[in-house]
Image (tube, rainbow, N blue to C red; front, side, top):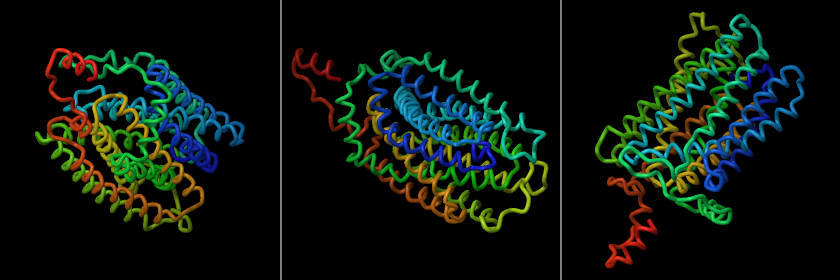
Length: 420
């Protein structure tokens, strides 16, 4: 909604800084925690912090003291780290290797249906308050109800060792890990060259949210229109994820070629959309604000609306592409939970910086240029990663290097079966 639905964005900007600071830490640790606790407890603990954060904004609507909101934001960062590491492991390790793009797009569509509903709630509840600045209490209560339902549903997720795919293969036979092993494996991520190549894409992938939500949606549109915009922003993400998912799974027989084509499509589309964003940004700034906020009934609404819709489309395609690349690096849930956690940790560190950038009134144009540059830098690095680490025969580099030799006796056969 921009500013968490509040007229004064300072409290939510500070809360988001606290959120993404703890998210950066627990995003990286989340993969290890998932490997120890499993999906049930990890998801439930993560989801519950979303309810608390929405409740803190309900409190702030009536008692404008930002301390509770900031604390709830920090706790939400911990919970988000757990939830997204778990989600990343499920999304990239449960599906068969040749259908990871499809499953990522399926997840992204479900995920963004939440965003569509989240846009409808403030739009409907604040429809007759087009001049109001802050959303009403019912908006936050509605969010809390949906978030509570999600927390309960997390207990229905199967653990990876009980998942059997359609072709009869299992997701993983690995049981839960230990604290010492996970601590060691998490530290190794910081020297893993594959993770280092993902860092610019990870940093960029939430960095642009602050600009898009606060400096496009919140600055250009009135309250009810911001809610309507978000219905289409998250709806566009559903379309974008399905489109890029198809390209990454079905466009070519070669997995590496699908990766190259997917990255190229996102790069071309991203360049065009950020170019449109530049044209939209030039007429207004902190010092030259728009004279009147746009309503969806205004004749000048269409251009900025299409741009905001396109931002949502690009976000889904960009992040689905990165998740596909991560999923192509390994197949077991333990490794992918760590990779996904590292991605979310770096992503959240970037977001923490972005929210403070906006709090300190950095010019809108400078924010746009930085966002455009970060995404542009990431494309050749992802191409290099696909070239070096993604194989065409559905084997990752790690599997080929560590592949066991052909056994010469029954004893060797049994040992190999146990080790694999």
